[in-house]
Image (cartoon, rainbow, N blue to C red):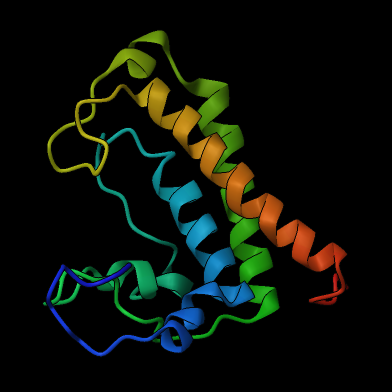
Length: 145
């Protein structure tokens, strides 16, 4: 998220708070829930409604995550959550022992780990962000309806 040491791109604490708003955290969590269900067999892409979203923007010239460039509606995020649930159910219902023990290739951010360990990382990631989002909603920070 932060630039490389000495890059000096002018980011401030106030500016970085844009990454902490509810919708970018929810999108980030859903994007990686979706991406980490991929075992690197075949191609992977975000659903069409989310192509070119924040996570697809990559790292900037300072080595930092780019600021979000779009805002997703509650309905869009809930739709992506349902899409991810359906993918998770499908992947977990059909995953084989061979897939679970397959090692992720160099093009994957978790290369060298097994797909089984990636599924565990995915679960931990969803628990972390999902728990924080649920706490925020429960505190009255966002309407649950």
